[in-house]
Image (cartoon, rainbow, N blue to C red):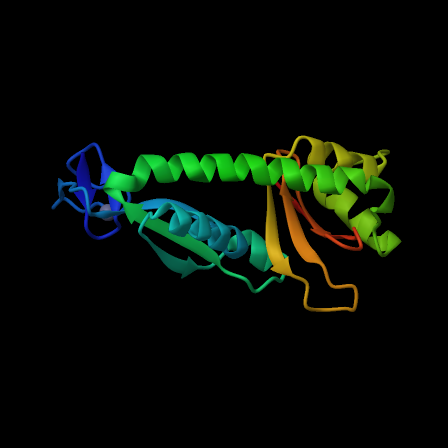
Length: 191
Ligand SMILES: [Zn+2]
């Protein structure tokens, strides 16, 4: 397996598919390799597990397009681990993501009767944005949560008085932002 020293990616080819670097070398056990880009809160939890498991890792903060659409300021984390730990790290990330989705899914669905949209005009706006007509939008959001591929805790809500966390639900149909305490649906984007 080849290794690109510029972007820390593993490459099967002799040219890096990400940056075009042609001066690749064979990867060695201690080289740090790109593992995952994830939201900050998620990233911190994953790094905690790595520390418990004794997996060396480094983190680079980056921006996040979906989050800027929602007007949130938190960053993403790029996480890197050594080549020798890469397979174990991938397993940990996968089982972490699966567990997180089912925990958040149950929390949201158990409180379904509390879900609300603050203003009728938001409902109109979101229906338009998602191309929905003659549909109960809350029921539509419920189906999105049930089918969610990823649900991420985006950190504490700092505005308003209810507190809570931002839960971002990623489904094939829409990306939905919830408050984890009031269960207000705060914002909706096309998937
Ligand atoms: Zn590269």
